[in-house]
Structure formats: structure tokens, C-alpha cells
Image 1 (cartoon, rainbow over the protein chains, first blue to last red):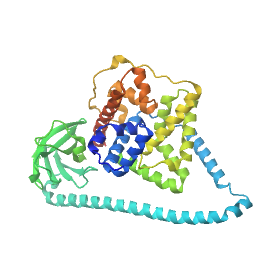
Image 2 (cartoon, chains in turn brown, yellow; image 1 turned 180 degrees about the vertical axis):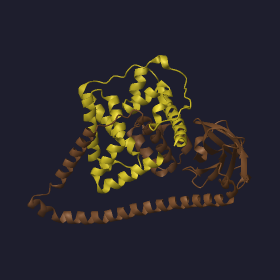
Image 3 (spheres, each protein chain N blue to C red; image 1 turned 90 degrees about the vertical axis):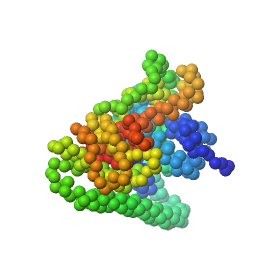
Image 4 (cartoon, one colour; image 1 turned 30 degrees about the horizontal axis):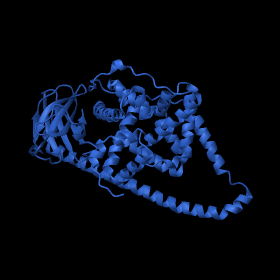
Length: 259
Length: 187
């Protein structure tokens, strides 16, 4: 069956929540699983729902006793030995020798392939991670040089606002000086946004976000003095509709850094 | 936290191929406590809970290759197995009955960003989720009742139940994202 589905409507229909909770029928499951393979957006939406439910479940956790854990492991280890030692009879060996050799060799090549794939995947991941890290480090270094004068002042507490998982390339700096009660912001690198949007700076004080106003992107590379807040625990920048909002939009958080 | 779930998944998939016993050990360490909590929601007697945990992990062990990351998270898969195992044990002993809803607590949805810093069991502070949503998740998700059973018991249309499930999860998602930020800040 070929069809075009409206992904947004599909997500909003609530079917994925039902699926994650095990409330959908076998027929529905088949269709959902087809969509999961076909549409990565649907898959990622499901993962978020599952993650939410998993986190919600954690509050009901009850520690498993060490005794029970080892009991289960003993049972499993026993069963696997039984499976492994079940080919002991000579007649069996003769009968199954050919099959075993065939199976072993196909397993060997299959495993070889799997291992190579896994290795490759982790290498790629590692590589990407290192590239991002390198970029952030060099940006941080660049910034250190240009702002040397400020760093010479020992009263400044420098906070690197690193990119969040969603926006790893973003970076900004805060110079926080308690003695002179000044805060300077340096937007090192934030992606360009559309004209209907504006970046907004937040301080986290007592676990609550405090609005520090919207930013103009043409101030990149310049230090900008911002309102002083006492007892800030962290700073973050989000992308909001022009003019800013009263509270931050969490999934639009570009950078965050703690003091 | 995201990276963590992903790490566990990758570790699990690798171990499943080569060292299935180690894969089970990983699952016990990562999910044993939370599954124990779920099992205890369905079964009252301590020995029944132990039985369910044991049977559950043996089932997982025997069906390790049934799990597909394309279809669900590891946790969703495990929860299904342990919930069904517990219900089977319960059925042997008695019939289940839904506990009556305290209708006095039907307030409008209310939850506020907690001003205190959360601890590591992120969701521990979420008793501000409306009781009607909490009970719905409890019955359908943890205890495995069908939507029809809940609809009949409480005389709520199935459509309303479906809507409430979506609303409940959306609320949980918002709470969770705020808690994660607060946790980051705290660290």
C-alpha cells in the first residue's frame, strides 16, 4: 500500500503515545512499525515519548537485592552451560559435523562483518565528536586571545556557554565580575536566524530562569554589557520569537554554561 | 541522559552478539530496579515479585534476539515482558480489580516548575502531575489494563482516555525538559 501521510497530523493524533504504552492492536503495530522505518521524524518522536515514560517510571524504582541478581545470573549461566554441552555424544558429533562446520564458518564471516561494522560506526562517531570538540576548543582559544585584557583582570569569572546537544557548534562567553558587579557577554558563534526570531539571554538564579533581554546577532565578536544578576548559577541562550518571551523555550536552547 | 540511553543500547547490541550473559547482566544493572518497581505495582507479595523478576529475566534471556531497536526502546520492550509476566502470576492467584478513583481530587491540570533543584531520580518531584493522569498511566501502562476495561470501570468514553494519555505525556515531557535544565545547572 502506497500512501502519503501527514507526519505532523500523525504525531499529533496520539497514536505514538498509545504505541509506547502498549495499547495499540497488532494491526496498528504493523503499520506504526512500517512508518518508524520510513520516517525518522516519527521514530525520533517515539523515542522522546519512550524516554519520558522511562523517566517517569524511575520514580517508582525499588532496588533489586544482590541475592536476587546473582540468583538470576546463576540460572542463566547454568542454562547456557547446558546448551553448550549438549553435543557430547559421538554419534551426534558425526551426524552434525558437516552442519557445524558450515554453521561455524558462516558465523565467523558474519561476525567478522558485524565487528567491522560496529568498529566503523564507533570510529565515525568518535571522529565527529572530536571535530566538534576541536572546533569548540579553538573557538575558545581564539576568544581567550582577543579578550586577553579582560582575562588579566583576576576578578573576572569566565564562563563558557557550550552548545547543547542539538546545536553543538554554538558557543558564547560570559565574564562575570562580582566585585564590580558587571557582566559582559561575548557571542562567539551562534547560527543565523530568521528575522522573526531573536536570541534571548537567561540567567538561572535559585533554579529559575531570569530574563536578561534579547540579543542582536551583529554584536558577534563584541563584548556587550548586560544587566547584573546576583547569585547566578548558570547562563543560557535560547532562540525565541522577536522581542523574547517571559520564560525560555527549552528545546530552543542553544548554549548553556554553569558558574 | 539521552547519551546514556544510547550508550546502553549500543552496549547491549554488541554484547547480545558475543556475550549474551553479559547482555543480561547489563539489563539487570540498568533496568532491574525500575522493573522491580513496576512489578511491585502489580504484585503485592514479596515472593511473587521475586518470582516475576526471575521469570522475566529468563524470558528476556531466551528471547534476546526478539528485541529490535527499530521498533522500540529497550525499556519499552522490557516493560512489556515484565508486565505480562506479573499479570500471569497474578491471574494464577486471583482476579484483578481496579481500585476506585478518588473523584475528589479531580482538579484542573496544575503543575508548576519546581523551585527546588531536582535530585538524580529526575522525576521524583513529579507528584504535581494531576492524579487523574497519574492513575491513567498507572492502570494502562504499569498494570496493563486495557482502555476498554478502564472506560467501563470509570464510565469515561474511550476517546477521552486517548486524549488524556496524550495530554499526560505532553505534560511529563515539559516537566522533564525543565528538570534536565535544572539538573545541568545544578551540576
